[in-house]
Length: 130
Image (cartoon, rainbow, N blue to C red; front, top):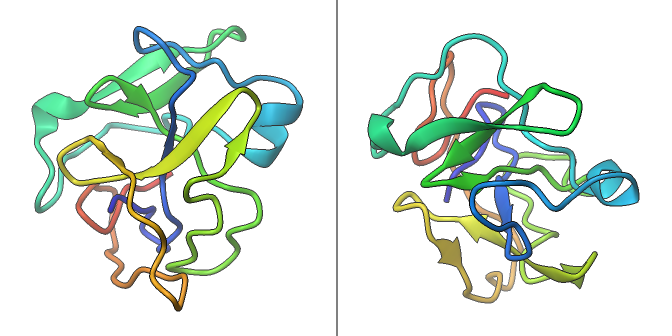
């Protein structure tokens, strides 16, 4: 699954259409968009051509992967937490993003965590710098 360099899981929102975010207001308060800061670089396990951005209503750029806008989950505080996995809120389901760019629709493991982190300004299987 994709995660920030600090290990926070990245999610996609099934309500998003055509590469545009459908998450604003209270939704974005619980599901903060991953905003572009600096250049995007593909790390191990990630295809550079799948990285991109989409413009939000405020004109700022949100990071996308395979056309899916990426989000964090407010209640995931530590590395590997996946509390947002399979949530059905704000009009659609939320899933962790797989390295292929697809929704990982599996139930969380019994421990509810993922493992692995990276450092630097890269996106990888386990890391995408916010």
